[in-house]
Length: 168
Image (tube, rainbow, N blue to C red; front, side):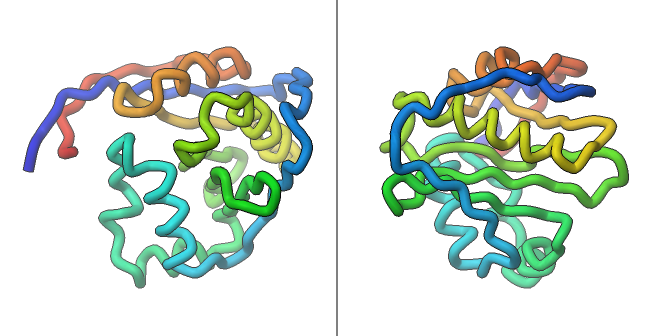
């Protein structure tokens, strides 16, 4: 097991950003998938996160992941481009008055087309429709280089930064 040093950035917002991001193209649909199957979720998770060494859900047993995915306060939203899955957002609403953006990303073939900026704003608007006190996330230096700048441009503010050692 290889350990690497990673900077982790924690970001939050306490009010909707109210920015408008025009759709970068036609054919975009976002679908809420209640109680997704473990294989479907893992296929999305691996397609989006493999290159960035996502581990949290990969380390979960199928049983634990199924329990989490079956919780109605843990939401999966899948971005489709012309009917093909292009990315996903996972909102964790299990804590009162706050929502965590647990996972967010695009499949490699859809990066660089303006979809991330649009889908992030869609996700922000959806989270704020629940009227939480706080919406937050964390990202790190293993994520796509555009992740942190996109979150900051979208209105998130850095509230904590730490350096950890974690496995790849």
